[in-house]
Length: 324
Ligand code: PEP
Ligand code: MG
Image 1 (cartoon, rainbow, N blue to C red):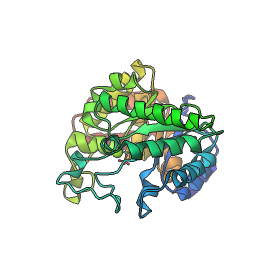
Image 2 (cartoon, rainbow, N blue to C red; image 1 turned 90 degrees about the vertical axis):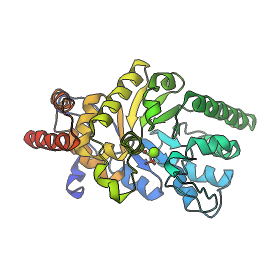
Image 3 (cartoon, protein in one colour; image 1 turned 135 degrees about the horizontal axis):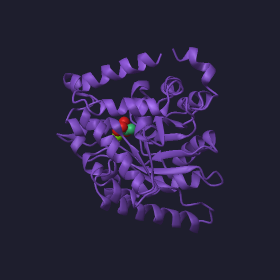
Image 4 (tube, helix red, strand yellow; image 1 turned 30 degrees about the vertical axis):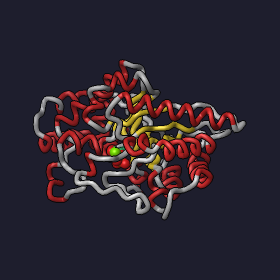
């Protein structure tokens, strides 16, 4: 399917009525990078830094990390690259840093781990900052945030790392810092979080899991995992509205962003960018280039009156089929 769409690789992601919606890519391996550049990705909305950590037998050193991050930043330069700080725990394990818990998704994961281990966080942030010297296309993003306190502590550490790199004589700019909105508590604190950072990005994989109390990896409850659940859609709309009230850009980097059917709703909600795996870039662009913002808003208004995820999904598919 994607092969037939190569003709639109170099065309912008723009609706029939000229509304631009930048498409960014999620990366982790260098192979993702080449494919996504070929398909016209305008930036990296999520570089999962835990991927290179998972491929090793011990923590990569600061110099090793700097080299890995530099490759990403160079490959996409001058496009922005959003590097998420280490997001281990939950379903992402490091063999050399075992975490054993009864409820790992409700346990020690993401920013909770790195704030308890500032030495890991500081090494990583210093490596990111050093890797960005002369490129200045780095953005730093914090995973699994549930309170403003965590953001304040992380910002304090990022400023400290920045000061340390400057004192080594390296001319590094302070990068934009953002927060992932992927926990229900954060949905209700979007404005307070937004006041402290430069951008927001929704992790709809975890947000769906936590809002619906459905383990994202458990096949027994997979039928209940619905990103089109009315509660999820209401949360997404509220996050965009509240983020915009604080003048921040709001993106989304969960799997939902790469679903062409969902992308029409996300366009209508006012997202500033969608970030997805490279395989979905052309499908989403194709869907968005065939619709107007006006029509997408009508579809969103209709969908928001429905109270059942299955009905929402099928009425969306029907509406998009009618568009041709
Ligand atoms: C998410 O939770 O939606 C997300 C993008 O992060 P990850 O899938 O890596 O948890
Ligand atoms: Mg997540």
